Length: 332
Image (tube, rainbow, N blue to C red):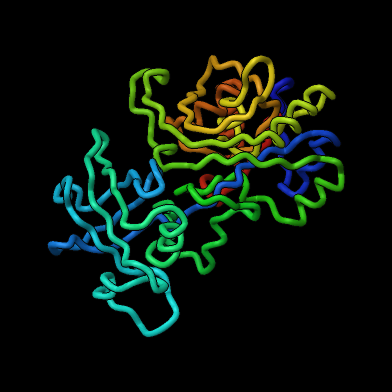
């Protein structure tokens, strides 16, 4: 626990977090669900390809990374084979041209290349049909430092995950269990959920010479009226808005207008770095991040850079775990 007012750092276990929250506080978490965004297949003309979906643009168009990129140009047709087990006879790579669940096969056309090396892909399916196809053809895109496949892919989902759209988990929420959420609610802490679909560009290092020169990524967010009401009521009663994870922070801060949180739906390019004045968030729960990332810039803007570095130094000394399945911090 990092106390901004005094600079004190406490070392506790996560299930004791209720000791730092008060009745009437609102715990706001990101309920976005990770999609099976890694696909393997081949070009219609031959040659294996691997696709990592980054961000949806329309119900049938995604931005994606494609390997081998130098051979994938606009107009290239791609076909995919299932990566997850499906009922019925064993399927082979040739089965990519067959149907999934009685529907059409999963194909995509490369529409264009972007300056960052990504591609725009238009799929042969869209909306709910594409979502169901990805469950058969795709796998969860785990971070590269997780080298062993998860026996249960649900371990990379929060217990409250609902709408599909992220390609990386909102990992601060992985610490919560139904039992802990129930205990917090019994204490009088209200839970509310925003949606912020996380793309891999979230973790892209800051390569610009100055932090403010970094080209920030877009994320699609939804802050519904029920969350707005809960947050503004908490503030009016002198209680706190506690964001679970940097994605929830970004959604809430993007929704601040005219002295309060307002309903928000759409893309945000809000870039939070030291010097930013927080308006919506009073406290945040977040994991330990890599240096020179927008995530580290965001937490350094919430507490001082010196306090964050001291907290990270203590975490390293005590052999805390970093990254997706690592330990967490509550910044008050």
